[in-house]
Length: 109
Length: 120
Image (cartoon, rainbow over all chains, first blue to last red; front, side, top):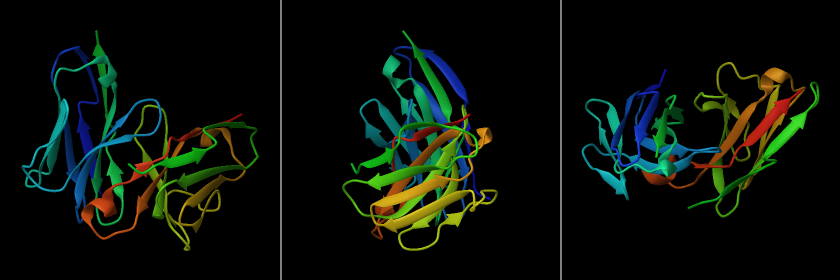
């Protein structure tokens, strides 16, 4: 059975801090690792990672995958209150995505 | 990016009634659509996968007679919760994936905004 584990489950930081969210996975026929941001409604896509060691960046967010250690991190620098959300990590196998439980990030002014 | 809509966004119904939720891909053809449910403070749980023109594949523990899925066209899938009960109250989200053989096309799912179902 595919498994995705995220840590921490919850995180509270001050504006301007840098945070690192962790995701480990065990996915049969692994194809890619996806990160989503979920606020009040459905998740919005952030990154898809397929190759080890290649950092993907979008503004203050960046992510990298380690296929040897079965691990990915999502970094957010200079956090803002608008970054407050649940961040979901999903492992894509040959057929479906398996999601972790998410990390709830709260950024306080 | 591709747009997926869901209707209704919010529904309240009485116990024992059936509720239909629609999921539409607005600007692309979705060969595969996924239905998820999410309980408060929990992650998305895949309920079923539907491919256009064929029967849906349900995840273990999901009653296919209770959650009827129809994917009659490349842009529309419906989930009908039959004889809904309070324990079916949840946030239901669909996602759609287009065709193509590249990793990107295969794996990237576009999510609808979700439907909040409350059964009294």
